[in-house]
Image 1 (cartoon, rainbow, N blue to C red):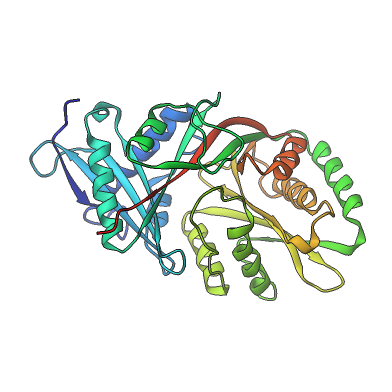
Image 2 (cartoon, rainbow, N blue to C red):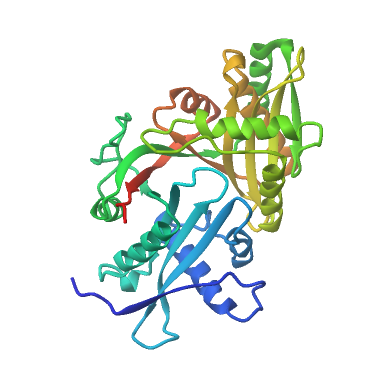
Amino acid sequence: MTQLPVSIESIAVPSSLDAPGAADFIAVAELLNAQMREFWGNDDFYGPPQAQLAGRRSTETRRREILAARGGTESGGPIVGVALVNLPLTDNLHTGSVNVVVAPSARRQGVGTQLYAAAEKLAAADNRRMLMAETEHLLPGGSVEPDSGAVSAIQHDAAAAFATGLGFRLELVDRISRLELGNTAAGTAVLQQAESAAGAGYELVFWCGACPEDLVEAYAQLRQKMSTDAPMGGLDLAEEAWDEARVREAEGLARDMDAEVLVSAARHVATGELAGHTVLEVFRNNPAVVYQDDTLVLESHRGNRLGMLLKAANLVRLREVVPEALRVYTWNAVENRYMLSINEQLGFRAIGYSGEWQKELSAG
């Protein structure tokens, strides 16, 4: 393999898209968008540079770094690859995550390997001993089996080969599913069935954007519990630390990225406890596309069909709040048969898989 000569440098997140140095950031943003368009064949995952500007800033809970590979031996060459590095700051301090993207013209020339090496060096310098990465794969699945013993596999394509070649182990497989939103009547019927199954012991609470002050502490506990209740496979992750400040930080990030966040929560009438929640996100630049985020029901409240109640209610409300919405994407661990069954009943259909990988960094 011929190695393309590149220089790797850190790209600062500018204060605005008009600030000095913003051209490099915009080039990175468009490279990431081009990769998503190439993979999916559409712009459902397009992130406007302004939204990416907000999303790539470091916060109190996460340090974010951008490493870019410039082609050629002279300074100022074109950006032909990028590595995004995320480092948690309040929990899981032994971990980091990395995402490497290379332009088509520079692939198979060692650019990705050089970018990854720089990312690993950065993580190791911050005393991280475990790196995580994610790959996405279109149907059909294939031949790479998770080390964790999960029940599915992903195809051994270029992304999987790159990860395994760098020493990563596949630990978890998620199914990527899409729901084509149909008529409201069908969704309402599912909601009515779920309400009947849940009974009068629970009531639904909705909010858009900011969680009400009287619920934020309980909501933070749901978010924290979500970090350990979702299937983890063999990933070396501990419980996240959530409080009101972290909830508000996440809400602020969504606002800065011009996203609408719709939350449906179930409140136990007898105790006032929040028993579960589900989250939908819509970016205003493309309201036709919706992303399903967390769904959680506390163990003590399971068996009451609250998962279906929450998701059906939020989908019905989505049609009211965002009538332009046409489709919803979601990710679920293939071993999470309960949630997959709910999604299938709602009309979600598999369109691909994502692999969750990790690599233990050598000491020293």
